[in-house]
Length: 483
Image (cartoon, rainbow, N blue to C red; front, side, top):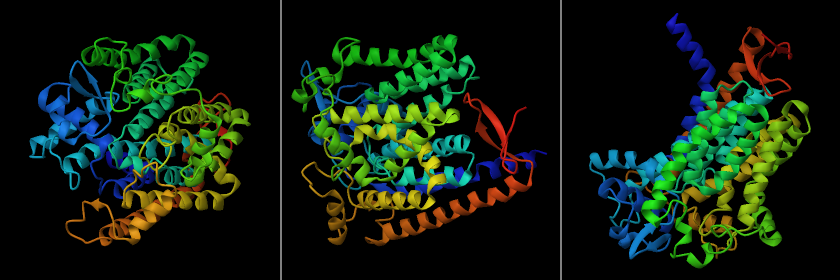
């Protein structure tokens, strides 16, 4: 009986298992160079673990920008969530002999790689699973769910930021997890508290994810009423951690890093943490510029059309509206920043936490045109793969970023991977790409294999009724089976 249960579990989650393997193979082996943003975060984590302090004075050798100053001491100007959450994994690496964070090693920095793996790559794999399961629940189509999760995970900014020590992917996973935990009308108070905790951690990781917390809070208020208290209570521990950190680092629970002078002090002093009302021209560049969200990763545009369709249908209205609101809000934030890309970046990076909300729209678009989903996914995956194979953090001065990555490849300026010490470039990347393509084929195969069983057996696929509540749908009948 136990063997049958484990076999059933494996069969049900087999696409997700292969999907996780695919993301880990594509993003996991990449060893990015130590640049300013990553140096600030690595210094923060190292200081917390190795020196039991949040001051990074001892790391001045690896810092260039992305820091703040107060009372003669240096601090990272980043939100504390990602550095704090990475500290135990950094400590594990140090326990087995990894170099400390203050070592000035721009290349072959495996301490940086390990910290990035747990801060960005693993969250990206978890996001891929969440996107597929949610799309499956909404669309009832395993093929659409798999296509959506794979194209969004590999054909958007989620991929390059899964290889670098930034907080965007981690914040995206936490925020999207909060939404999934809270949206079920039958969610018990404990689950709503968990949603609040995830949302709180998302904000401590990246302040702008407060947008997601507010949107989920409105959803909880509408659907649960009394559950708002549980949702708020769940977020209080994260708020307390942030308040204590602000008091220790900046002298007040309500003082933030961007309120203090630093490498970008004059910019951060504008508006709220540097964010002003969106400028129409900048917002247009965020979406349609040469590094624009819709230009470089067209699968996002496909997802937007799908979200509009979902919003027009009664059963899925909440899903479509939430996705559109979240994407619009993050786009407005990037459009109100002093830089379209927020510094060296493959695209408008502040929009990254909104991208998982687009995946369900891609799954809905699969019903309209499978070819469009596949083509848009491939067109986005090509520049994203080129970015991680060279260096995704292109400077804002690059006027044709895709060409910049292609030129680096032609010149032989490949980035490092875990295979680089054993295989010369570009063979290390080609081997990695070959394994990824094999896993992609396996993902398609295991997804299709589920379909005959779903049709011929009494197995069911999860779906939702008009109120968003979970119901069972028999694929052979195509109608809800309410029990």
